[in-house]
Amino acid sequence: MNDVPSALVKSGIDVLSDIRNTLRHSAEGPVVRDTGDHILNPDLGPYARWDGPPRDAAVLIPIIEHGSEPTVILTVRTAHLSSHAGQIAFPGGKIDKEDHGPAAAAIREAEEEIGLEPKAVRLIGELAPYLTGSGFRVVPVVAEVSPDHRLVANPHEVDDVFEVPLSFLMDPANHLRQSRKWEGRDRYFYAMPFGERYIWGVTAGIIRSLYETVYR
Image 1 (tube, helix red, strand yellow):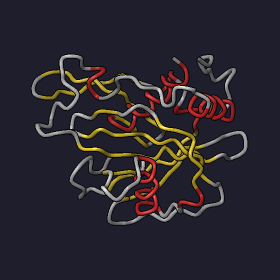
Image 2: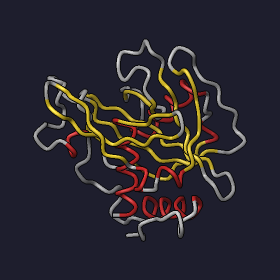
Image 3: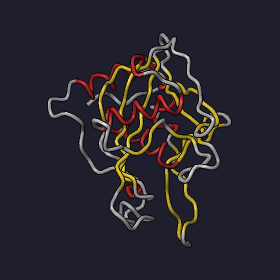
Image 4: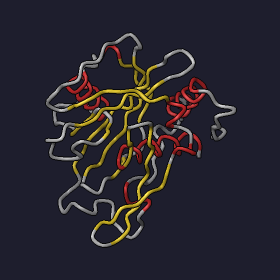
């Protein structure tokens, strides 16, 4: 276990080093633990708004090492998509039968969505699957990305591409627990407002999962 980061003692590059050490040097492989939307809402099952079998998906958590301040790439999904429309998300999507596992799916989707070429991606490791209320079993794939690679958003899927400092996302002081009414009851989720960007829901939950994997 690494020391819990603080803005006073942990730089972004130190946080990236902790992530590398945790995910690359675990003899048991990826840390497996229960994670998902239901963690903050224990009265709900893992797939509260989905009646069928879970759908396998993967997302890429792309970290760019900009000197001492690594950043994480995030996207804004277009408004017409069938799920999580208009929300901030990691590049990713369903795992196709042709994909050779979650990492291959995440890299393929990142190339389709933001023009991230596979040769610019260096894998670090995977997190435990994140179970969403909408019925997805999402494997987050953590990777480093070449800082000189030019990203191009696919306008059919992505409205915008932006970066957030890794140190901001891994600071627990920025992990706000908020709630909204759903079916007449308060439902809780993580949110990480960053300027005009409102990072919340599944994306914020996955970021929180990365933090807890490294520092808990």
